[in-house]
Image (tube, rainbow, N blue to C red):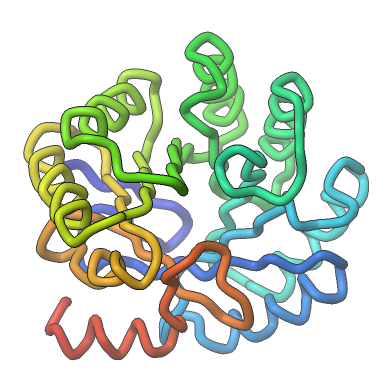
Length: 254
């Protein structure tokens, strides 16, 4: 597995890194949360995910730029991941494909953003174009797939991750919902298998309380990043960031 460097952050090497999401609706909420995250930089937060689908002014490019600049000032050298999560994959705002693609392109052009999330099921042709746009602007791409209803079969999980790499993603992410302990094992097993097969770093998680073990087992399975919450979680099963760091340290992950 290769590593990906984003500012001072290296994904795919060392302990699993911790990403802390911001899900504020207003600029004030976003910046307040950013200040809390900055306080635990390298002590529970390695990367900040700005969930722009929560932002009330998300469809104003001018406001996105202004808020991103303020975020950068607060977060300093911490890497920023910009994510518009579509409604079908757990986001909070309905968005047509063309509108989503235009928003991703705009986020690619924002200097203060380091990494862009692009959803796998946007369509192969469009996904390739968006990946190219992100790379042209010097952004790393985390390609993602989310299933909030079930856990696909191992072969399907592996196929999605393989497709992401083929489409040019720098980092591959899949999150699924377990209905049984066996589902959690399926996700973990698929992660181990793909770690030995793919070159790009992998992020996998089984959501909810049942899948919480997947958020702390990355050093074993090969998942390079886990998500920890601050004031509010962006997905079910997230562990508070500082507690998550303590667990990883207790497990002896270096």
